[in-house]
Amino acid sequence: MSWHRIVDCMGRSNGAGGRQDAREVAPQRLEAAEGFGVPAAAQARRSLSKPRLDRPGPGIEAAAGKGGPRRAAGGRPGDGSENGLRLPGGTLIVGRHPRMLELFRQVGRIAPRHVTVLICGETGTGKELVARALHELSDRGGGPFVAINCAALPGSLIENELFGHQRGSYTGATQTNRGLVESATGGTLFMDEVSSIPLELQGRLLRVLEERSVRRLGDSLERPVDVRVVAATNRPLEQLVERGLFRQDLFHRLHVVRLRLPTLRRRSSDIPLLAEFFLARLHRQFGEAKQLSAAASRSLMVHPFPGNVRELLNLIESSYHLSEESVIYPSHLEPGLQASPGADGSETQPSDSLYDRLCSGRADFWKDVRSPFLARDLNRRQVRRIIALGLAEVGGNYRRLVPLFRLPDRDYHRFLAFLSHHRCKLDFRRFRS
Image (cartoon, rainbow, N blue to C red; front, side, top):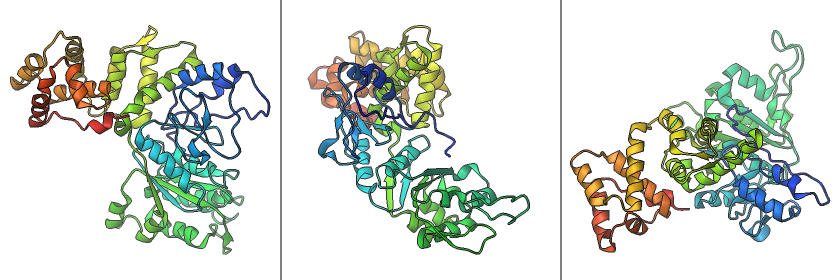
């Protein structure tokens, strides 16, 4: 089982056939899954005002906006709505960013097909959750979902865990072990960090994929298995193949369909959504309701988050416990932001302060940003942070950034020319929702 599951990944439905008090339903709908979140507070408010709709058959219930929960567009598994998808088992996969909506559509198309899937993404992006979605949205959803983290076990243990052994096959083998491949028969085997499987064992895994059979250690009998394999990796398998560390034939067998998970920094518009969910979850756990200030939210949106959603969760939890007030300010986030790899907290505060002054008209961009930058009193990272804070505010629209900084419209092209010439212009797409 993946060691990095950071939050309870199953938000179970009540399963009741009749109506239930909305106040009893709401807490159940606030559960989340690794790598994703849901605007829990808003969703809970909707639950208190409207009865929960029963899930229509095997379809997906999507978390919607003003209309409350509803069936996804067209009623097809994998379709997205305003806030995300609800899987048959109750898990919520949430994201409003177009990259996430496209991922939802891909999952919906692929899940019913009995094909091997390779999920690629950085650590903390939610690979196991996507694997579970593929399982639950298929006709195997009623079968077992068996997960193994290949990086957490040495080669000898991986062989035993995957393929099993017969009693007496080695010293200490006092009973027969079926192995995870056999245990997943009728369901899905999820192999996280598949790149960590030793080269000498990759041939056995290839045989499982090709022959749909497995032979236990110490046994001569080939046992048929009916299992769907979903693999995940945060390393480029193509490069491992070129270096002779991963079998090319196994790579092609795993790479029937590839799903690429976006990093949190590439869907930064989802950060407030996730932060709101984590705070609602902490409220339920500890009884204190807290929210992010506007400045704190902007600080999160421009942070690179190399650890993706896992890092965001840790940061929210830390700031929640550090704050003695009902509002979390940037000062509560700074310890976590400074500890993050690649973060330089010493530059955060002056940039944020200057940004606030620009937006309030107490500072002039040309006088207080351009001139100090040319005089080397401000560095490029600080200017970029000011721009990033503004783009986060206006949804990535550079033209709207001009009035935000209290500049006249005629300065628009001069403003862009300055940013481009001094390499301070950022990709607007990462701030688009």
